[in-house]
Image (tube, rainbow, N blue to C red; front, side, top):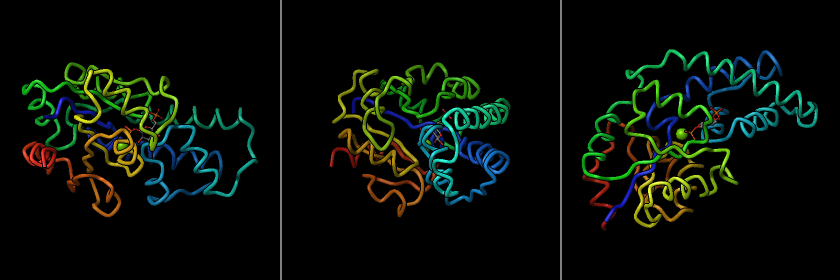
Length: 220
Ligand code: B16
Ligand code: MG
């Protein structure tokens, strides 16, 4: 029997990926003169702010050219731009079907937790009006290794006292699915079946995620 559910935030509960992309695109152009594409953005999903910037610098072949202080200032500039973009979010920004799914799970008595790499997760959850349903949010600063390591998913399951083997994890990024699998959880991918081929089940979009299907496949 399933004992708990763990959710990624960006790309699963809400589409902040578009705001991360816009903030990185503008900041990388302005501060590094690097043009990033949607393909680069795909690699940034689920990665910490610092690792995302390192990936952009590598993509632009500028490794070793900036001091740690310069890189920190660029990451701060990106985050300020990002925070300005997410300040306008409302309940309407919850991805299709997710408010219903979270409510169904809570009503069925399943404990829920959020495993997001984002330091902005609590603010976003509050803007979405989900602070009551999603009260258990892992502090990404408290886990040793980021996705694709299992650490943040293990911490989320521990928060709700759900053994990993009977916990279901939702993710939209390949690195996140790898982390869920490494934690020994049942993995649910949201997005492309090609990108997320390691997941136990993939739904093309949040609106397609179906609890009955997950419960049936989990037992099987
Ligand atoms: P922040 P998730 C991740 O969230 C995003 O996918 C990733 O693009 C971002 O760099 C990371 O959070 C850190 O976010 O700059 O707000 O701390 O997908 O793990 O929910
Ligand atoms: Mg994500």
